Image (cartoon, rainbow, N blue to C red):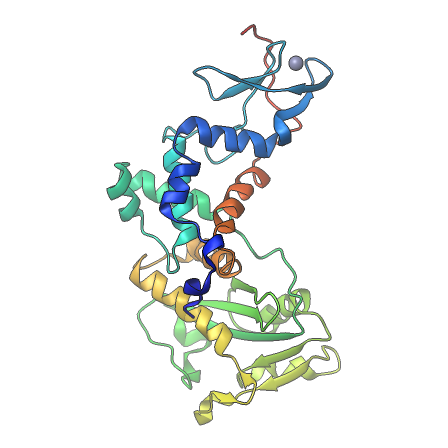
Length: 320
Ligand SMILES: [Zn+2]
């Protein structure tokens, strides 16, 4: 689990590295500009041609040589915020560099923003981190369902916990590639019935994959001709957790990371936000060997998920 320590030195991204790279609001704005307008050049509809952009003093704007203005923050999570851009960047850095999650309290303490602001910032950043669009590619996949939140324990063998007598907890379903890229996808689901889980399984797991699960009866149909997966299962009820390569310890490791984080850092997470927390944990987990690239990946999401495309910028005909 403790794979962060194995990141080679050249991939590490320390707080000193971060502070060197993003010391001021201007530098942060420049980074977003360069993402949204690669090379600092974009098509200017005012001029009808590609133009190089120059910074407009005292504004979060750039302009072409004829004064048509472009706002790289338009449509991003930063657009309407009064919080300084470098504090947003620091929040993204923290979220990318932690293993078990980061509390709003910490950024409140370190930057002086209010707790409410800190909480909202993390919520906004988390909203960018969805990992549920991707397709698993590994030939070997572990799947497992569990319950998050609530007060009752959910341990191995407690099969009575599933379903209706388990209202306090939220069901979640996860799939992880074993070997290869080792990526995880996790969903909050309304329940753990076959009708709920199988559409997800069929969408995300290639038919030729070998699928490892525990003995939960819903998984019986993995190997039916309709699904045709090579299905191996471990008998947790008989207190067997590993038999050769038959186990689900990779996905269980991910669950324990999520539960430790939500219990320890976030204390509790309402059902409404649980998917975004799963996204946050999945996003980091799926880049756990990438060190310095995690922050860049979060920053990229800011541009990718901006509601306005940079090809349709705000243009104002204004003299500099
Ligand atoms: Zn122009």
